[in-house]
Length: 238
Image (spheres, rainbow, N blue to C red):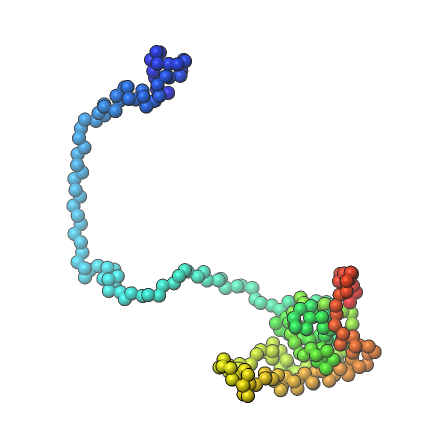
């Protein structure tokens, strides 16, 4: 607090005048702190510029061709994974011949027969197609429920060609996109490959024969699984 005379105090220690008013009355702003004029700084000698021919960076910048394509943002590169990709372990409840219930996909609710696990970790299953219309397919074991029912597939011989490569789609000619292609006389229906139809018949022949030996097993595979009102799946025994 600025010092003030006794007469300018409202109470001991409380000034009647504000700090700016005291500063104005003292005229402290009129006092010149340093009478010496500031000496102008002497100009530093400028360095001699190198000739343009010697300034290679400048020459490159001026003569460079303009590029109209620039990256919008820098995309971070993912680090190479050190862990090798391995197929997941097969559940203990799933063995060759086990009847599975599909929980997702086009054939959800269908009962199918498990054949083997492929290198990718996916399960190779079949309906058989003659019984419930499910062809040879690959499914993830996370989307199946293993039941206690089993089919004897010891007599089924799977060809080595039935692998992950077997299910890759074949390249087709790009459609023209015109009306004649879809609705005209030349419109062709997409057909299933003949060699896959033959492979399906070979696999199903042995399985259907094994299913016929067990009473009511064919009708069990043909029926679809569903939950009725009030049924809790965790209390069911499959």
